[in-house]
Length: 150
Image (tube, rainbow, N blue to C red; front, side, top):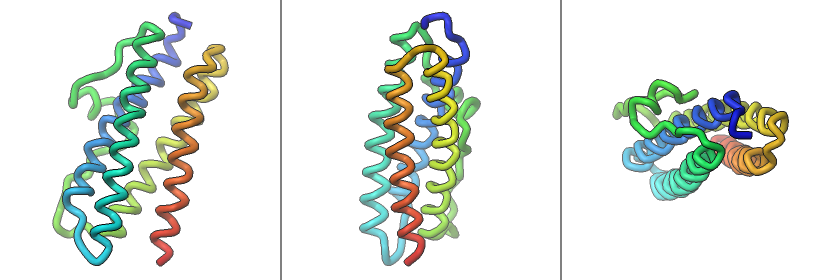
């Protein structure tokens, strides 16, 4: 398992992406405005708290299998599958929610690849980690889409 470079690289991209997502969710939490402020303020906080837990779990899993997780903002920016979205006062609540949905969809696709890689590497622990992460994000996507249908 320690020699599986593809899985380690994939986990590292997941770490970088979670670092980026954690920051982006904070940004939306701080800057959301409008009639759904309280709902979105709380949900973005719930999401970044959950992402922070996964962020740590993925990094520690990578260390466990003798990898070296990215740990700087520059590495997160360079290796994340999602991009920063600098705040402007023009971004609406719906645009924030759609941005999170779009990011979650990219991450779900990435997690699916991770599940396959972990299976091929005969690493059920990493496979389970990816499955749990994917499951949580798919549920969040469903709920956020329902929010936008208001």
